[in-house]
Image 1 (cartoon, rainbow, N blue to C red):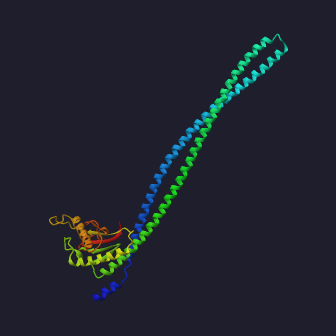
Image 2: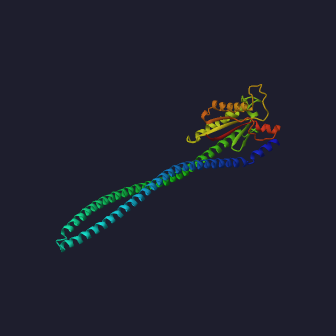
Image 3: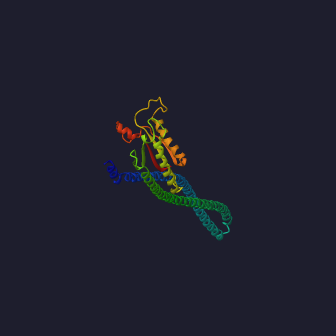
Length: 343
């Protein structure tokens, strides 16, 4: 009758491990996508901050040049007003000279007076012409300065346009980088999931006849009693047989996984919540759990598994499967877990 129950239990399909495996994979993918998004936002914020500073400096220079241009325009207007006044004075002097010349023509008696007056007006007219010429020179100089300022403003506007174009190109590059990272992430996750499923499938076939070995989520769980004597980190004979099967499965899987997938098998040691006495080889559960994980890793290395594909970690009693304070719960919590993951 016990044999019949065992056969029925083997024939039943357990969907729960696959569901947990898919759910954990989805959570890993979401966490990675969030990390990529945060990184892209950080890079984008730094790029935009630098461009904002450049734009601020350019706008400040444009404002200064605009003020200088307004001042030069005001000076030019003053010079033009002065020139207009001089031209008006010149016209008046010309009219006076014409009037005096007419008087000169009318009578010889008024000739001397007219000549003196004409000489005076001629000198005044020459002075005003010189002043007018200087004013024209100043206006020309101001016009040249205004043209130079306009060229500077044009150059600054061109630089501003180039900066804005670079900002758009940077944003496009960041968006393209995020898209490529998402595609690469999806491909890596799919590949690793496929090989993880193959690995678990092989372990199920190899270790299916042991009651103290089970799957929890995305991990294979060995009860400590299968591998170690109480309080020891030395793998017993039965445990060595199971670990040898595991090493062979890892070696076969390694041949199929592409070299660009940076995978590792993490070996986690866990204990129950009963404190050690401290009089033995290990002072506490931290040391015992770490030593057991290390023993498994060393055994796998001795059986051909590459050392760079293995990681040992000890968790003591602080990651229990069952938090209840009962013998059954403590038995579940004393375990070695194997997880295939990325570095």
